[in-house]
Image 1 (cartoon, rainbow, N blue to C red):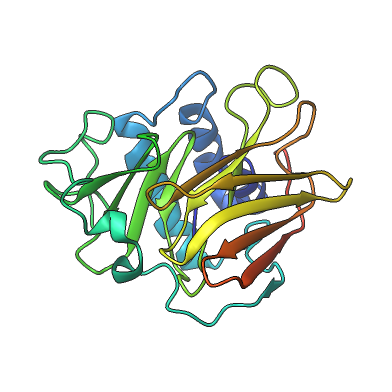
Image 2: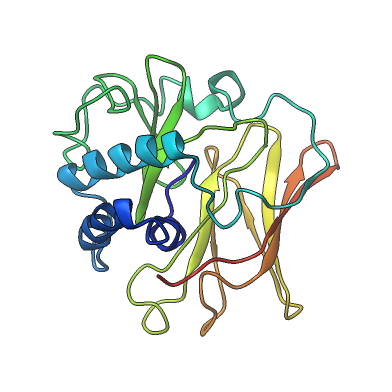
Length: 229
């Protein structure tokens, strides 16, 4: 499961027992922060574990997925997670202070993309990451890309929303096909992609996200859209 700033908050609010957690998470995922604070990361990891335990479904957890039978998002298929060139000796200050089984350890954190994402592999082999306004760990890695939608500032104003995530070694580029007919493609750089959506488009707009694989085939995932919370 990947925690999404808007989608997971909407799902958490459906359960009264988790309402307090949703409110706390909304507070720590405020706009204006490029990276999650140490306390924010710890809370995101806690919510990721809790959400997984109670079986919450985020907006695209039940999306239609087609066209892929490879190894998926496992450490051996994400070279940036095993390369010494991307590895950091210590823990970045943005991630320092996080505790628990999902927290990064020294010499496990790698820099993905153009330096905009941190990712690491836990002792149990799960891939976790912190990028832009989202953080979390993958539960079902048998897909070539992770898909996260978030607005970098205030929903509906300021900078346009983005679609981004980790991509496996097979992926050359990623395309978002919006239901209004517009398409945007971005190359994968060091196993990470970022697509900036058009102005005025909310991050929960229905779309199909396509991973364009290096062998000429593709994997598509239908994202039906979520809630603004």
